[in-house]
Length: 212
Ligand code: ADP
Ligand code: TYD
Image 1 (cartoon, helix red, strand yellow):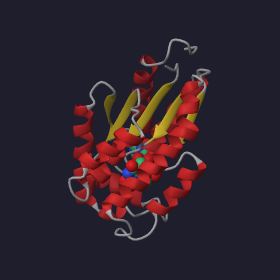
Image 2 (spheres, protein in one colour):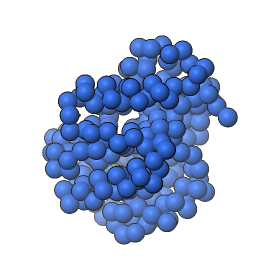
Image 3 (cartoon, helix red, strand yellow):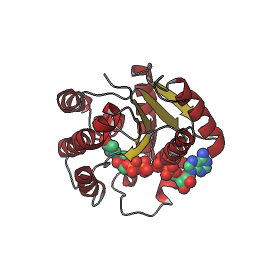
C-alpha cells in the first residue's frame, strides 16, 4: 500500500497530452504537492535508450511482437527505477502515456495482438494507474499538430490519418473497459479550458495525506 497517486495521460498523437500533463504538474506543484513528471516510452535512463530504438527509423524496423517486448522492457525499467519508488514515498506521479498506449498501438495497429499485450503486461508490469485522462481529439487535427513538430521520432506518426482514427476508437473503447479510472476529456477546446477540467477531476482524487 502507498499514499502516492499515479496519474496517466493517453490519446492519439498530437491530442495535447504533453501540454496537459505539464499544466497539471504545474498546478499540483502550485498547491505544494510533491509531483514527479515522467513519460513513456522513457522516464528512466535505460528506458530512454529503448525509446530511441523504438521511435526512430523505418515503420517496418521492428515486427509487432518485437515492438511489444521493447515497449514492455522500457516500461518495466521505468516502473522499477522511477514510478514505484516515487509512489512508495507518497509522491504523485504524472506520466505521459503508459500501458494503455501499448494496448491500443501494439494491440490493434498491426493485427489483433491485444491478448499478447495483456499476457506480457500481467507477467511483467501488473500495475494500473489510479486515474487516466484520455484526451479525445479529431484525428486529422491531431495528425497535423503532431507532424508540425518536426522530430526524428516519426515511426508511428508515419502510419497516417486512417490509423489515427482507428487508434482514437481504441482509446474510447479502453475508456469503457476501464471506466473506474479513465476520464475522457474533449481535447478540441482551448488549452486552458481543457486544463481546468483536468485539474478539477485530479483534485477529487488527491490522497488525504497530501496537503490540498
Ligand atoms: P501530444 O503530447 O498529445 O502529442 P502536445 O501536447 O505535444 O500533444 O501538442 C501538440 C501540439 O498541439 C503542440 O504544438 C501544442 O502546443 C498544440 N496543442 C495542444 N493542445 C492544444 C489545444 N487544445 N488547442 C490547440 N493547440 C493545442
Ligand atoms: P509520444 O512521445 O507520447 O508521442 P506523441 O507526443 O506524438 O503522442 O509517443 C511516441 C510514440 O510511441 C507515439 O506514436 C505512440 C507510441 N507508443 C506506442 O506505440 N506504444 C507504447 O506503449 C507507447 C508508450 C507509445
